[in-house]
Image (cartoon, rainbow, N blue to C red; front, top):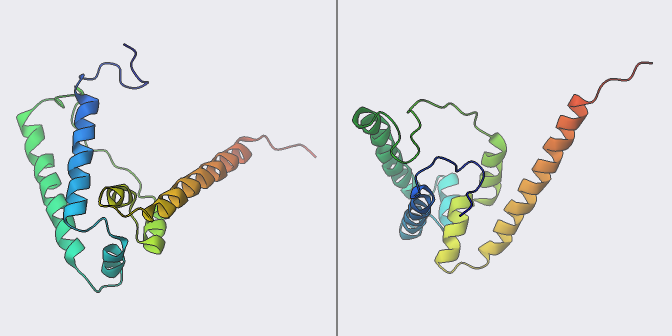
Length: 151
């Protein structure tokens, strides 16, 4: 049995539990109607604040896990990695995409599960946008790394 790159040394249940977590997340989005783009757009236009309660519920569970789990365990149960704070810069390009379309990638995929098949246009747009941004970033990285010519 071959393992994917980066999965060496991980517990065998690591990937199946990621799948289960994604299914629970998708079910929650569908159940709370957050998989409907019009609901997200209404929130962004300050007309419907239901998303605020969904986000608060998720933040409360996550915050509790960040406080309680490191006190119960030395290391992460499935990966064996030590617990630590990881700061990551927020990518404003993602926020612009969500703000323009009203479609979060997670909610877009969950929206397929509730029968919203026209969302495939938006998911296709996400893939095209991600590819274009990848091409743009790799070209700008190559031009930054290119040596300057001597005149």
